[in-house]
Image 1 (cartoon, rainbow, N blue to C red):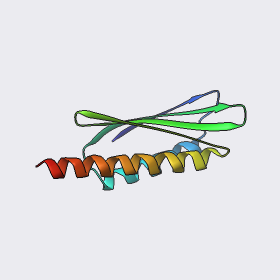
Image 2 (tube, rainbow, N blue to C red):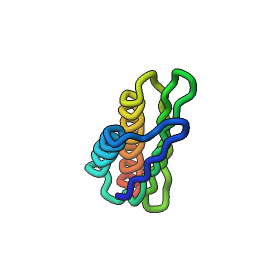
Image 3 (cartoon, rainbow, N blue to C red):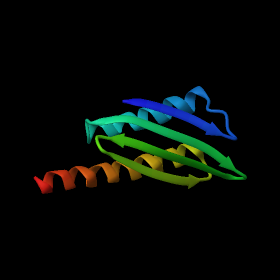
Image 4 (cartoon, helix red, strand yellow):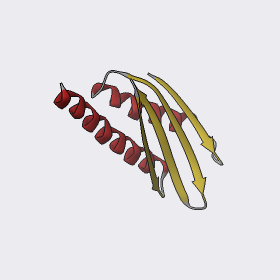
Amino acid sequence: MQINISGHHVDVTPPIRDYCETKLEKLSRHYDNITNAQVILSVEKLIQKAEARVHINGHDLCAGSEDKDMYAAIDALTDKLDRQLKKHKEKLQNHR
């Protein structure tokens, strides 16, 4: 899985980049066909935002989260993506 991490009004430091990559790598244990993930980290006043778009075969999953801490925003983001991946996988299995 290819992961692109960018920042708007924030410098993406190596610890934040490593944390984000390890969290997104855990998504692949639920669904193997993830091809690409794009993460945008931004700051607006005191609110830290994390947005992601995950490309799967034929579909895109989008999620976003806000928090006072960037690490907590990344945690919430990966939780949302995890739920979406499980739901998508269940839909594929039910249709067959």
